[in-house]
Amino acid sequence: MTLLFLPIDIQVKNISFKRTDNLKKVPAQIFQPAWWDSAILDSASLNYFSDIIQQLPYDKISIVMHKFQNGPVGSHLDVYPNMKIDPMELANINDNEPCGYRLVLNGKDDVLEIFDGVNWLTPKLPSVPCCYLINSTRLRHRVKDDPGREVLYFRGIINKDRNQELIEKSLKVYKDHAVYSK
Ligand SMILES: [Fe+2]
Image 1 (cartoon, rainbow, N blue to C red):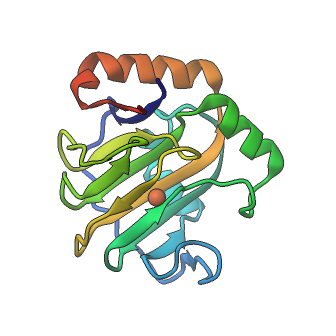
Image 2 (cartoon, helix red, strand yellow; image 1 turned 90 degrees about the vertical axis):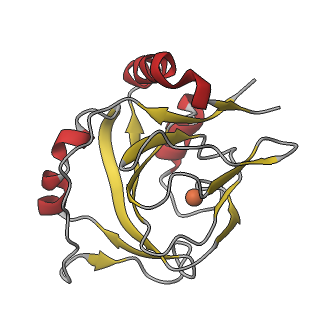
Image 3 (cartoon, rainbow, N blue to C red; image 1 turned 180 degrees about the horizontal axis):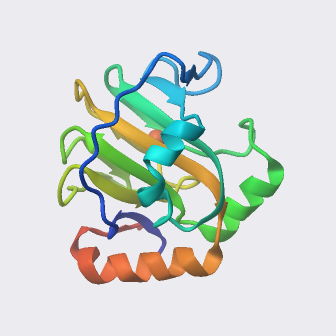
């Protein structure tokens, strides 16, 4: 069985992040343009989220995207071999799955839908805001329309030991929310 989805037990509180126009918008051809209005966090914005980033198991962050949902998000994988990604980073992700960390800043707790290999399921987040983990290379997922949904997407070089520790810690709290492949 492969772990596909798990809420993550980190401290997330008092977030009042406001996107500014000086953040670089993600070009339309690169990242799911129809579904999300995405911008890449700059160093000042990364600094705003440093308390959260420090709790995540990255040796190096390569990108954090701030995303507003435009409408229903169709079925997709977040990371796939022929996307624009450093081959070393892709290998690191493949070595450490599940390792796709996402943070729902605003939105509903029951609009993410995930495919376990047989059925589409609707995992429930324990709260919002909430960090969760998905298998970014294997978990096919989609999101129901959730106007105003606001998410952070993290990617980078994963520290294997810290990733395992955070998963084990989170499983103790959220094992009933965990979803595995069939
Ligand atoms: Fe996704």
